[in-house]
Length: 349
Image (spheres, one colour):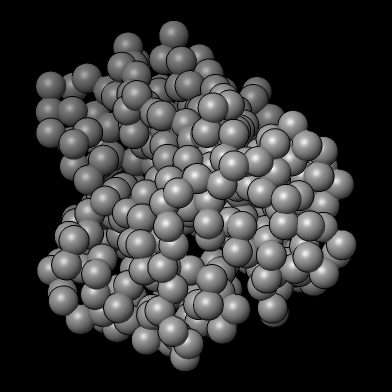
């Protein structure tokens, strides 16, 4: 029961509960989208949705599928918790910024030479979109976003993008460019329409290739790591403090689980948290995604149950990759999980 509560608190604290029904697109946008795309769609972490050249190049269906599928591993989550009518309300609100005619695209595939398209992609596209279409380095989250880029180049080798963007939309974007971003018209760069068809065919071929690393998120078997301790509470706490230092962390403090939540005299002394940190690891984590600050400094919880048995537990760091939808956290999260597990196992041997 305690583990279930711990997991629910974790998920609830991240705002990942089910969205409440609200047919009002403006309110739904403010609740689900504005933090990344700006209150008025002017951008931030995410694409500036109100940008006229963006509005002129996307369809309602593209927005609909993007909201539903997200961009795996690229911070943009899949809003599978939203109902159809809520997604439609958001789409309608976003499209209210469009001053031009409605845009629709045929689903007919573009026929081109993907081998030639690959050559052109390497020449014209990799500087922004990466050698394999994995997207720009950096997530767009404050600390990792290059200040000289108005937007982050999207990942093209991404199942969310490939499912949302028809060939005709990709082609139109290449031909017209997107004013207000680094994306310029390929026609103005000297390419012919046939060349653009070849690039589109190459981008579509990503669907047949293995999933790009930038689209991979770690799947945690459990949001919480738990170990039983054969020692009493006091001994286990001291063991954790010792193990922390042997694994290149420095010990911070011990406080009750209820510290600050209740009067000091009412705190349960049999439920405590050991805080510790590694400055280098801290800087790496914050540079990748400042949201990990919700879980820092590192901490391990130690509980003495009513039957006298002691348990040691912590958040499973690999769950951060899934919750934050950020593939750049993968290696660091896995490294942190190994450290947490080693500390907990060493302290309970």
